[in-house]
Image (cartoon, rainbow, N blue to C red):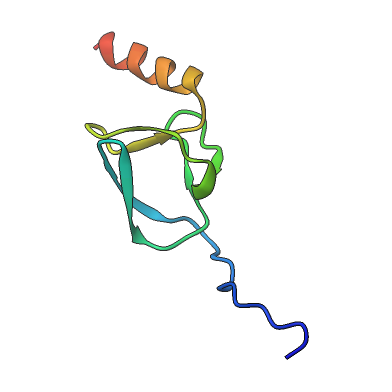
Length: 74
């Protein structure tokens, strides 16, 4: 067949993720998660930073530091 693609259709919307040590599991499919600090959408294929304890994603190392600084002030 011409113009046939075997790739699945792209996911839309926000995913629900279970963050694990060194990995994560998709609970509800989606294209992205939101950074807990900035609110920025993070495509799942670019997700590198998260907290297992807080079950949150972060867009950058700076966002991780900002979140941890805020947590230690309490």
